[in-house]
Length: 97
Image 1 (cartoon, rainbow, N blue to C red):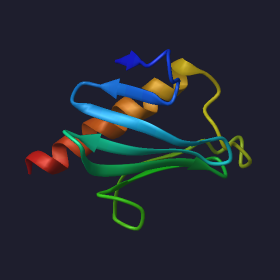
Image 2: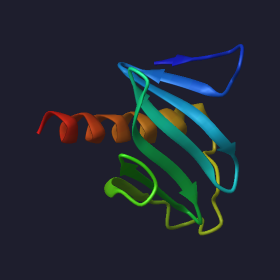
Image 3: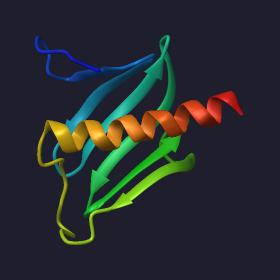
Image 4: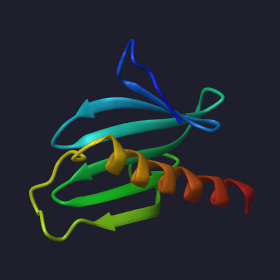
C-alpha cells in the first residue's frame, strides 16, 4: 500500500489505484487497474460497499458499521486500509474467476 502524500487523493494497493472522488459523506473512490475502471467504493450512512465495475454494478464487498449509522468517512488510515484492501481482494477474486 502506498498513500500518495503529494495529492492525498490516491491510494495504491498492489495493482489497484484508488482515486478519491469525495472525501466525506460519502467517502468514495473509483478503482482502476492499468487505467481501466474495475470498481467503485463508497462509505455512507454507516455502510461501506464496493461494486464492479462501477456505480450500479455487482456488489462484491460490504461492511455495515452498525454502531454509527451516520458514518460517512473512515475514522483513520488503519480503518480505511483494512476495508479498501479487503475490497481490492474481492475485486481481484472476481477478475480471476
